[in-house]
Length: 277
Length: 315
Ligand SMILES: Nc1ncnc2c1ncn2[C@@H]1O[C@H](COP(=O)(O)OP(=O)(O)OP(=O)(O)O)[C@@H](O)[C@H]1O
Ligand SMILES: [Mg+2]
Image (cartoon, rainbow over the protein chains, first blue to last red):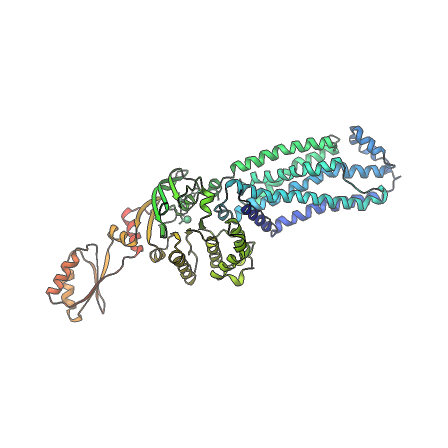
């Protein structure tokens, strides 16, 4: 393995990506909205909610479908809380946010890969790279490591920001910090890498079929649609996050991720790439 | 070890119905500056890609620096340097970044990278703008940076795909100097794709002329001139008072064409070398004082155009 050459490619791709506004803007805005702004507003609203108001006391009735299918372990957990505001807080940040959270690594890896695969084609910098003394496999590996690792890193940093914001806004009435539990831990170490890999793999596939960053970005963005279905499933009381569910969702995500990355490796051949330039 | 830097035998590469390179055989000796000429779409760029194992041939045998580009591509490419047709630079990065990345890619010894990069920038006159983004460079500066990148790892064999296209005369001259320097002083082999015939004539030991993927002619510019038998123009200097007598003689020789005279000499064109001794005998025997009879060098351009005319290929 020509690791030095691979490092050079990874560094180059990330350096180039960071110069692009069309990559940086979603990369900054999406985490800010999903993991800082939304939980911050949610936390503040709940912190100032009147626990005896009808809106809060009727919560259980209004969110009927959700509570009807609630697993036992979860009910037990909810019963530990004194009032409805605390329960709503727990549900909001441990049930609904995880699926929103998953959008982040998918999107981040996706947009970075759009720049370093389709964007590279568009900027015509691929040709010189193909003349470099690496094998096709080394070149491919080097090109996927950057977006993948960046997607995971952004996912992890996003979690830290999220946990801090939730703690800061809810500590006053929850009396506890928002700490990692088994579900979140699995989300972070098992699903985030799969999700980033999925965003990346989808983009590698899309990039081989389009010729500009913009096209790739728009088409590749479709990969978040399954995640939105997941969110709807939760609201409808079909999907509940628990360690087991997270394990299963992770496994389901890893399958297409591995297929896409493997397929990308198979079709990443110099001879074919250069003929399509 | 072979003394050939490049050896291709019967190499063919198709793209759909187009035969980009068609049964091509040629060899380039180590240390040679080899000119690869041809019209647009003749197959020059495709050949460079095949020779570097970046594109695979459909059939035929290729050896470059003793290696097979298709199976030993990475080893081979670490010893070749390529200036691609478009500069293929990262315009969002500075010149220094561009070169540093490629120094790492090509395995320039770590402790030498900094020095080498700044030397190359210096050599190609880019030092004072080394920390600017390449996007803001002029076309000529980009071309120079791309050249610097091709030379960066001191390759034994250098491929230059139209290195002076779009450059002004001064920059062109500098690139020519650079090519001479690396070939004559450093003994590197240069494979030069160009449609600039003057450039090829000036720099190349040998040239190949491509026509629709096939080799139309190959040899030194002189050999080609002889082989193709193009018209040679001669300049005859004689005593002025005998001009009319000389003209009469010239006009009587049927193989001479385009007889003209200016203030100092007579000019004529012929394809037939054998008439020269006869002509001189006649001139001397009529007491014409001959000071000089000089063939004007046939330019590669003449050869090239003659080739096209003869084959009637160009639509
Ligand atoms: N990737 C490709 N797909 C389809 N056809 C191709 C491809 N690459 C080259 N060709 C065709 O092969 C032929 C040779 O092309 P090539 O680029 O090698 O020519 P060239 O001599 O470099 O021309 P130019 O002087 O314009 O650069 C052309 O007819 C071209 O259209
Ligand atoms: Mg070309």
